[in-house]
Image (cartoon, rainbow, N blue to C red; front, side):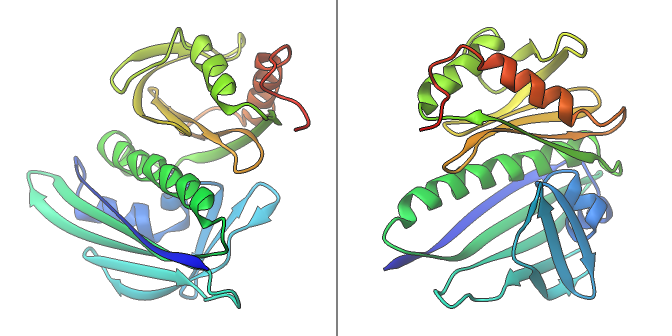
Amino acid sequence: MGQSFELPHEAVVEATPEEVWEAISTGPGIDSWFMGRSDVADGVVRTAFLHGELPPSTVTAAEPLQRLAHSSDKADDGRFVAYEFLVEGRGQGSTLVRMVTSGFLPGDDWHDEFEAMSLGIELFFATLAEHLSHFAGRAARPVTAFGPMVHDWPRAWQTLYAALGGPPSPGDRVRFGPVERPVEGVVYVRNSQTLGIRADNAVYRFLQGFNGPMIAAHVLFDGPDEGPLWQAWLKELYADDGAVGCG
C-alpha cells in the first residue's frame, strides 16, 4: 500500500523575484525558512537536521527568477519527495510564489506520516512567506532544540499555549520564552501540530516531532546560538507535566 500526494501553497510576498530566488535556491536562503541546515551544490540540495540528513534532492529544473524544481531519488519502497517553485513578479516590489510538494509515502500507516508532513509543510511555507515579506535579503541561522518525549500531544500543546497566555490565533501578539531572553512577537501560523511566531529579529517555531518530542526549530537573524537555552526552556516547561514521559 501507500499513497501519492500533492500539496500546493502560494502567497504574494513583499519581495522581488531576485529575493525569492535567493531564498529558494541557495543554502543560506533555505536555512532562513526551512529546517536544519541546507547546502546547494553541483545540482543537489542537501539538508541536515540535527544529527540526521534528509535524502539528497537533485535539481531537475532551474529557470532563474521563474522556476525551480528538485526531487529525491525514488527509494526501493517507492518513497520520494519533490518540490517545485514558481515565481512571478507582480510589480511594485511584490511577487507571487507558488510551492508544490509532491511524492509518495509507502506503507499502510501513510496517513499519520502524511498528516505530519502536510502540517509541517504548511508551517515551512508560511515561514517562507514571512521571511520574504519581513526579512528578504537577510540570511538566518537555524536553531534546533528537542524537548522531552511526549505521549499526550493535546496536553503538551495546551502546556505550551499556557506559557503564551492561552491558545493563540494568527495575528495575536504573545510574550514567552526563557527568563534570560524573553520573546515578544506575532503569531503568523498555527495548526494542530505546529506554531510559528515572528519577532523583530527572529522567527520562533514549535512543531510536533513525529513519534517524538516537541521541537523548537527557530531561525535567528542575529545574536548567539540559543539552542541550549531553548532546550533547557522546553525541559523546564514540561518538568512536571503529565504529557511527557517514556511512552
